[in-house]
Image 1 (cartoon, rainbow, N blue to C red):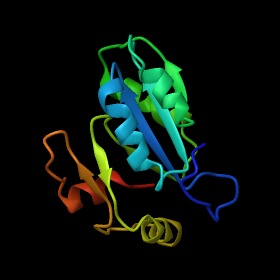
Image 2 (image 1 turned 90 degrees about the vertical axis):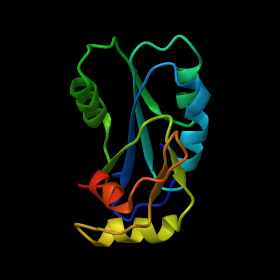
Image 3 (image 1 turned 120 degrees about the horizontal axis):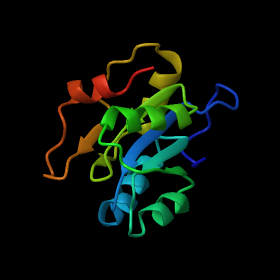
Amino acid sequence: MVSGGDSTLGKRPLVTACLIVRNEERFLERCLRALSPLVDEIVVVDTGSTDRTVEIARSFGAEVQCTEWTNDFSFHRNQAMDMAHGVWLFHVDADEELLPVDFDEARRHLEHDPLPAFPCVSILTPSKKPLNPSTVSGILGP
């Protein structure tokens, strides 16, 4: 588990980041470094990397499952969800970067509001354009 925050929910992580990756060494470290303040757990499904992707993921404490690409994205997304233990699952692409926000506030909302809808999490896409906060609110969910 990563050092994101102390969940008041006992030993169960509050937020798990779920990633499906393949040959993402160029982006993965920046992505995981940005996620670390928010998440308690990182799970990665690697679909055949031949670079340092798996090594980088593990250096951030990620649980990594290596598998062959099945040409079925939802299958691999479900693999990641099966690995996750968090109350909240945050699906993110390795080439996206969570922008700095008040992570403590975000975690308080997640701990105490069963259906939070708040624009306190922003994601920078590879094109360097932030996702719309309403899109991000839809990404976060129990």
